[in-house]
Amino acid sequence: MGIKRWHWTLATAPLALALLAATGCTSTSDAPAKPTDRPSTSGAPATSVARVCAKPAAGPEKAPAGAVTVDPAVVGDLAAKTKSSPPNTTFWLRPGTHRLESDRYAQIIPKEGDSYLGAPGAVLDGRKTNQYAFGGTAGNVTIRYLSVQGFVAPQNEGVVNHDSADGWVIEHATIQNNSGAGLMAGARQRVRASCLRGNGQYGMNAYKNGGPISDLVVEGNEIAANNTDDWERRQSGCGCTGGVKFWAVNGADVRGNWVHDNRGTGLWADTNNNDFRIEDNVLEANDGAALIYETSYNAVVRNNTIRRNNWVEGRKYADRGDSFPFGTVYLSESGGEPRIRARTDKIEIYRNVLENNWSGITLWENADRFCNSPANTSSGDCTLLVKNTARCAQPAIATAPLYADCRWKTQRVDIHDNRFVLDKSVVECTVKCDRMAVLANYGTYPDWSPYKGEPVAQAITDKQQNRWHDNVYLGPWSFVAHDPSRMLDFGQWQGTPYQQDAGSTFQPQAGG
Image: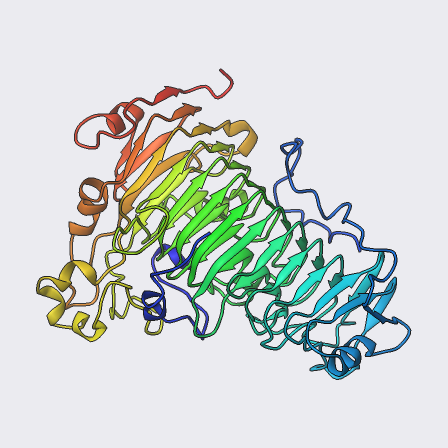
């Protein structure tokens, strides 16, 4: 996994300092076949799970008053009528398959406030010819009850809201079987009760050139079987896959979604995200981690059901002898930061159920990854709290007060009142699938680094307020602290010097 020791990012990664300026943020067709090497999703999901793909909500059978009717028999009718109509027009798409002109760049360019409503059975099909469905920079566009499929966006680009315009609302939509990302995101975007499945790279890529994106809501969606093009295999270590990827999002609510069977990570917040609430989701049977929170700040993760994740990727790394405890919930150089405005000043993970995943929660900090270090490959992205990033370069980095602010810290993480269940006979493993971890590597690089040796490992383990407490463990859990070689049993984990999991209970048999 690229994020384990290095930082992988888009070629056009967002600049961290852009988010600093926004710290006064507001907050707030059939499924593709499942690959045979992925875990089964046997067992009924929670009754509240967002099963929107199997039975999408139906749109209006008749055109609303004042709406422009779009005819599927006329190729390009939707694009042409959008172009000829004024802003704030409502378009009603008749039942049937709607098509664009055959030019690969043909697309709908909405105007401010336009709305698109699909009748029952209305589909916009790119026929594996058109790259984009809806683009342009107009704000406050609404798309409801419409299926969008068969578009071939390039890697890292999206089909719906291609240009990450602000204020879009996507509800009761089915965005499926496209290349690239099914959906991009802009500020104040709402994505609700929609089916994002079978897309080549992501269900949604929340990225805006020049970002950040503020006030994003992703609620009640089914996000399934994305990354069908298997980009991590095609471009090893790209870190560019999964159900949803978030880049420089400042204020997000991700709730009530069913995120399952994605090839790679389920939800991945990567680079300068802040103020997330991830709650009441079912995250299951994703090939990789259920959740990664990387080089980001301040989040609440609560009331989620997290099960049968990371079986494919966890087993792959274990089978090749990798000792790193890659967890199902994975925090990489991320922590609570009171100096950045948010609804919390820590990362709090509580009241979740984690059941039969490949390992549990890993808190990680790469000693060699800091602002302007060659080991940080993020093309200029640096910590929000460094006012002058040039001063983090050799040799000034070793001088106070900037020394502490030249790196991303996994700090102020509070993990409590969770239930961790592991039955190795279900996961079909004997070793390396049972770990909870807080650790760093031995600093070695570059030769002028002030973080050489064990200081970072000591800090993440002992000094950065990372605490487990009042949890319930069922099954043969083990624990890793300081570095990958330091394996602990529950008594050692609770004892001096680690003193973790005060008030927690441990029962080595999962069935009790």
